[in-house]
Length: 421
Image (cartoon, rainbow, N blue to C red; front, side, top):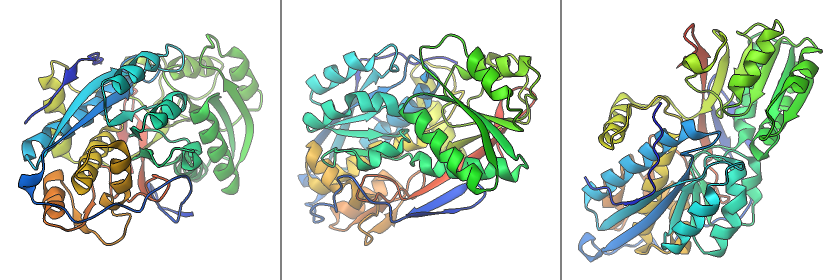
């Protein structure tokens, strides 16, 4: 898989969850600082002359580098669609590396982007990384909009209404995953998880929901991102003889899983999450056929995948190996541009004040499914309710989506996965 490593400035032209097999609808989640929308009346298109500058803090390097290409492709395609629509707003994007908490690439990227005057940051993918720069962005009055953060902690973060996300909280993924493992007939579960904001939050949600479904978590072992061996965690979990093992982590999964299998565990009884439900292929040195994983987001439409790949390969890259959070990244950019149109401003606070409205959170908007269609509604004086490639979204006052789909994937003999629900 190629890794996109550009950092140049580029202007691209052109509370209860109802659980189904793979989807959740969450209603009534509130908390944190939100907004109920700004002024809805808008001047005509010809009176708009906005330039929205955004920057990405997405993983080009580090433990989540496999998520960078689909997320950057989603951002780039959205920018191209918005600029081609010519609705009185041009989006400039500067791509930057978030890295991870270990290599700390965000420590260079975030100050550079803030210094260049961006109105919004798209990222990070890792909840743990976002926590390390979010207060800095809030102090600068800049929106932080993550397509992939899932830690429940952000719901109540003191963010002055400047933090938003198109990915659902891990409370939802944990419920789907816990029910899936139980429905597959497993009665005992071992968990090996990354000791960070993402891992601990998802481990807690998984444990609660698996045990609520009648199962028992017989062992749960944390590891640190800097660990180079996982023998102690593997031994402790296998000592309890679980029916299934959930691994909550990132690229280190390809080291943990072989260590477990080497001690005789069935490679088809693993469960993964969005951080490691990757197209492993030969990067996973043992067979995991039959193992499953969960990933927020609906099944992507073929035309969207084709357009993503068209933009990505047009930048000199190979086709995307993973599509994780591409739709959420695309929708984040569209929502920001729509909020700018409503506000007739690209100031961070003005964007934030209108994001809930353009997502349909005000409850009285007209449904639309593209930037161009929604822009026409706004410029005509109406209220747009954007439903995008990632779903209906509909932000609550905390900046969390109130509707989300969680896909279920199963690995085949080649250690790549296909969506089964």
